[in-house]
Length: 290
Ligand SMILES: C[S@@+](CC[C@H](N)C(=O)[O-])C[C@H]1O[C@@H](n2cnc3c(N)ncnc32)[C@H](O)[C@@H]1O
Image 1 (tube, rainbow, N blue to C red):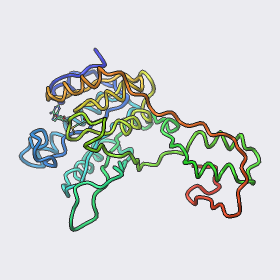
Image 2: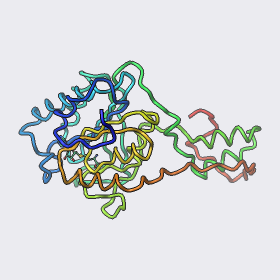
Image 3: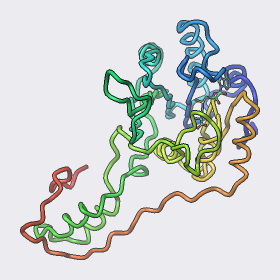
């Protein structure tokens, strides 16, 4: 099987050609069904029932190509009060094993509704194939902020500052609410796809679910975000996309040298003593657990 390439074609027709149990992760950002009214790829079904039946088929094929300890991530949103994704989640979790429901907190609201809270999140349904999924929790830790680090390192109750420093340096475990800013129109990362996902978000999915050298498949590659992320994280990848314009965008993106992933900062073990006025951030009280 030739890897690290974009397959042009219909995802269902192309997934069927792939062998069983080859992918460690599937990252799927499928059409949402009539959310992007000006995009032909999002309005290709007459009814929600047709759309849901199509989803059953491509998800079944995705799960077939997934390894036994692999994870399948599926994006969906309710931003315009479209609720097809709720039905999709319900039926997919009856057909496959539910692993998690991740909230992607986009950091800013979108699609301003006048009569309710402004939507700010999208969802990512995570299915697993077998009982035990590979999950590298340490790979997606979140660095502590400087105020928290200062508070911990200033606390005289900690005797072993080196152990404290090492604990802080690892960062805290990420929750399943992932805050990554959505791409603004002016963002340098934007490359011309109406629903391009931020690469920092896709990095998190790839880092937690795969090791270097593992295969990641994106059945709806769009502008190539999953491929660009897999490339910079040294994973093998395969992307399927039907639209030649998006393939061109993705290929251009992939021909650029990979952008570096941000490095975690090293915490200096400065044993600063807390002033009595220093308040400890209540989110990270003195627990050494995450
Ligand atoms: C939500 S977008 C993916 C965006 C992508 N995550 C990114 O960051 O650029 C969905 C993509 O699926 C493609 N698509 C829709 N139906 C398809 C099908 N049946 N087979 C292959 N690709 C399809 C569309 O052309 C569109 O680019």
